[in-house]
Each structure stands twice: as structure tokens, then as C-alpha cells.
Image (cartoon, rainbow, N blue to C red; front, side, top):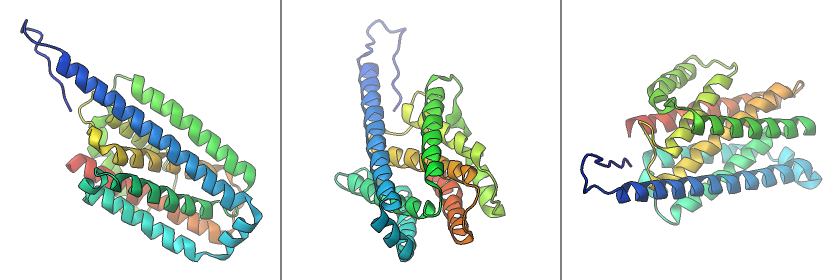
Length: 252
């Protein structure tokens, strides 16, 4: 949504510009409000499943739940990307966000089954702190990261094709800054205010990416079974999901 004011025309008014700015501010507030609720709900679900003894034992003894939650997450990405009109309509946008939080929370809970409690808490703290710092940087910097869309897409596709299971830290930082500027607006590319559900979705996935990376860095000893499942989840969140999402943004 670009507002243009003709300052050379004495009859020109900035009212349209003011309206656009107000709409953008409402959009930003709504996205970050929903994002906060999604993260709180995720923290609550993961905390109960990981630290409550009965829930923890049930989760550990029922791996079939992972086989259900992960495909649901993939389907959600496809719906958000391939059927954007659904994600713009009430109440489907809120329903999709709720299902997203439930499925992703369950997947993350499985990833933390054999992780130490202190590693989980530290990973969550570092991911949150880095997210806040990167978002502040994205809002304050004059550099337009939204023009990096094609390059981030190529990089993600390259990593996906090569199947490189190494640190994707730098790429995730780039995505978080890129997506934040798409939401803030005022750059070459920006998301439409009607896409608040999609905007919440992409920021949520970015933060989950950071948490998984931090957890892997902090966790020294993990059982092989869990390590393999975490690698799959890590690969899905940091490669497949961003590839599809950014292909949609760039070619929309």
C-alpha cells in the first residue's frame, strides 16, 4: 500500500497518507499482538508437555503424535501460500493460526523430550532476546532488506537441494529482518494489511527457527533418536518452510 502526496500541488492533501499510516500502524499492532499470544500459547503447551510428569510420559510413549503434527504443519504452509484468500477471511484466518500454534507446539515439544530443562529455558531466553534485537534493528535501519527477497530465496533453495545440515544461523537472521521490514512497510516490498494472519505466521516460524538452533547449540548430549528427529524438524523449519513462504512473497 503506497501513499503518494503531490507536494507541488497546493491543493494536495496528506489525508490519504495519514490514513495509510494509521492503517499500517493498526496492522503492525495486530500482527505483534497475535504473535505474542501465539508464543505465549506455545510456551504454555510445551511447558506442560515437557515438565508435567504425566504429560511428559504420554508424549514420550506416543511418537505417532509427531507423525500427525508435522504433516499438519506442512499443510498449513501450503494453505497460507497457495490459498492466500482463505487466510484473509474471518474466521478462517484465526482458525488457521490456532491450528498452526497447536501443531507447531506439539512438534517443538517432541524436539525437547530429551533436552535438559536449563538448555530449553536458555534457548527460549536467547531466542527471544535475539528476536527483539533483530526486530529493533529492522525497524531502525535505513537499509532496505526487502530487496533481498530473491537472494534469500536462492540461498534457501540451494541449501535445500544440497541438504546441508550445518548452522543456518545467518540465513535465519536474514529472514527475520526481511520479514519484519515487510510488515513494518515503507520499503520496496511490503505486506498488505489484510495479510495479518500470514504476517503472524512467518514471524512465528522465524522465532521457532531461532529457538531450535539455540537449543541444538546449547544441548551437548542428545539421544540419537531425538537428534535425528530434531534434525528433520530443524531442516523443515529452516529450509522447506522458508523456501515456500518466500517464493510466495517474491512471486506474488
